Image 1 (cartoon, one colour):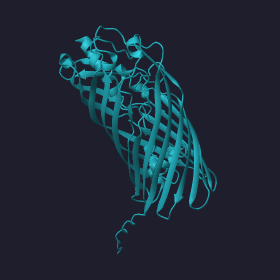
Image 2 (tube, rainbow, N blue to C red; image 1 turned 135 degrees about the vertical axis):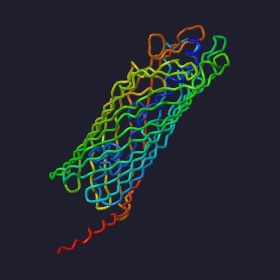
Image 3 (cartoon, helix red, strand yellow; image 1 turned 90 degrees about the vertical axis):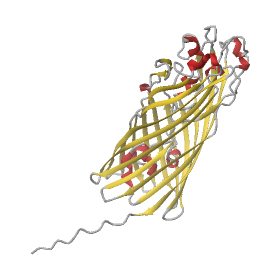
Image 4 (cartoon, rainbow, N blue to C red; image 1 turned 180 degrees about the vertical axis):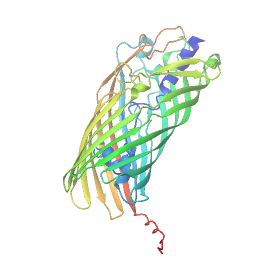
Length: 445
């Protein structure tokens, strides 16, 4: 049974619970594309409100920055190009199957945020988006097929917040974060040495989960034109319910319903925005994602009641540094740009064909056009330069698939990746809310 478990689960379930398929654009399987304005500034100063209403994702206290009722809606297209080129050291039975092809798949990521002022001190808001996930697909037959063929992930988060303006310089806010995700992943299963590597069947895993966490933040506005913000997004605990499909009846005991526990990373964001002149503002940003909390995730068979395999993510923490600026070219046109550097939580020690992530530099440009007093149109573009990355799977490594004879299948690869991201959106001001009714008149006698 142990061998059957390895054959059926080593590829599929190991990749399945990562939530994201490849280099989602916030390191590992995170997605940062929550703000079109932020996209144009390389996401500098998001925690200090430089990303508009959508800054709620990084720091909910930014909900108090705009009077009245304001809504932003954004949609981003992530054009990822990534190829894994097979290198010497790959098992002979698979080496001749070639490279992965372009595993990057175009992904559309919607996001939105709305703020509403209830009183001169209290705001409510709602941010929605996809914080994790992406879609990738290698060639169905390739040298690394035993470690991954395709990944399809969907996630959605709802983050209602309430903000309180303590005084003229300090605002606080918090709220729950409700997350959903669904996934389907496939990989080749080396069932028997009698089958050629080019004709291996696939197994799959499907799963979904709801989870709840929270966000909190603080915003300080100084009279010198300096805004400082710090935001926190808690880990969300997911009890994943899913199933594994295996290609032969002989492996049925290794398939069927499975479950796993996964905690998404905590996130701390800090930002500073400084007014340089009446038409020029500069921002810096920092983000820390505690990917190290994922560790080694056990996957339990519902029928057997015991772990049948594990997901050895063993990520490090991720760090992102960014700087950007905005310039009001005219009363109706604002230009912006920025640069970022991200230290990925994934390196040679924990890299797999499903997540061949690496450090990257991002260059961004963007603009906003004020159509009228109510409507502003936004656009942002970012190019990611991702460092080349090496992959090694097999004996002595965290990712080690064995064939029916118990022999490790080695895979060595070199990853070349880049991404072009285009984001468009708008901001609409519905107007200030109705004034609260006057206090009842109290007669004095």
